[in-house]
Length: 88
Image 1: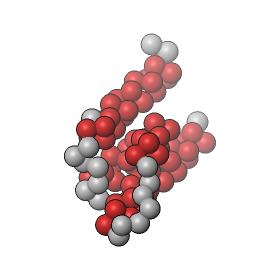
Image 2: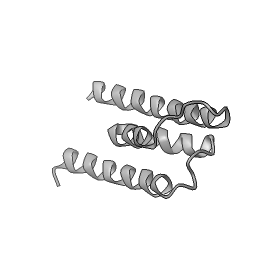
Image 3: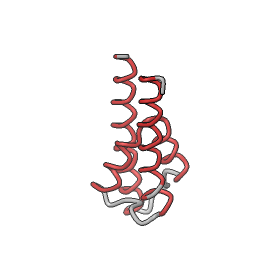
Image 4: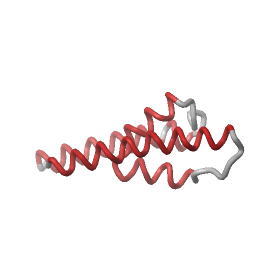
């Protein structure tokens, strides 16, 4: 369980940083991180870091697949956690 917590911590920090990096790249007209990569980070456990990055960096907050998709991913991950933990 401890390793899983470390994994979640790492992937959320990574997702937060990547969201900020993509915002920086957008402002500086540099090669961008793909939206699919940003969403994949959220699906792989970094949804909280992604949503935090979205609102702190004001990035992708107007894109439907992000302002609706990331919260849906969070809800599904919470449901999955409780389903596994309590075998509902």
